[in-house]
Image (tube, rainbow, N blue to C red; front, side, top):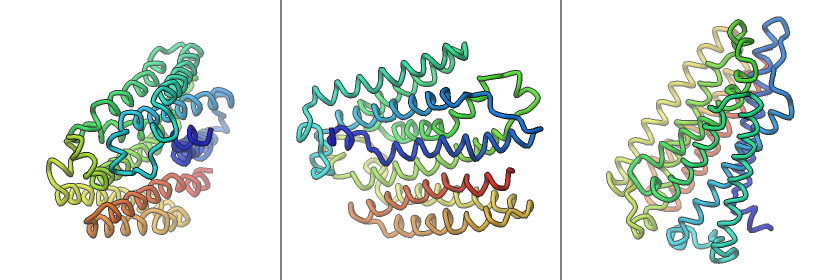
Length: 308
């Protein structure tokens, strides 16, 4: 059982759950309350289904990714190899099917409840994108990186999308702060893209042996580092813009949090990327990217106090 849990990256799934809960409790609910004390239309059970569907499809994505990457992982991270070492490929494939089917089935249930085929399309397309990413696109220039980044942004957007679908007319008059959710989605997209590029630099040895055409392989490590730094600067500029907005509203807690929780880690990340030259150093940069992402997600907490 432990090997199955290791296969689905429990810490990463915990971040998915945390992100969607914070979007719900720190942005959606407080935003609605400023409109005459309105409450969300999505029930607790329906919110649980949204999160469960997202987590199961993401978990399936991790499984199929490792399933397809057995030979690459023998080189890049042999100590973390699970499939063929602790689980057979047949066991992993069965696990993938169960996770994917259950996640899509929950998505279908939600689409039926809200009478919207588009909602089912979102979950089914996400599962399909993860499949194609693992089997083909991740080995291609940029495409795989963009797919993962878009899906990360979708994790942030989904609670808001479902809340809108729960009662569309309701939000014609009282639209909660979807622009704020979109800003967090952009943050998720950009930081995920940075991490994907850094990971490709970290895994360049195994990727080259398996004829992948990732950005560091095709354009070189120097270009990959330059693009990552530019993306970091975009995030940094975005955070400054939000800080100025919070300062104008005398929200000094959120302003200060961004310095400690996002900007300082972001500066450290840029330093690690600039100094990166081997697998170990790029792994440190990849880990720091996770901390930046976590810091961004947790910033919803001080934001929630400002929204009350």
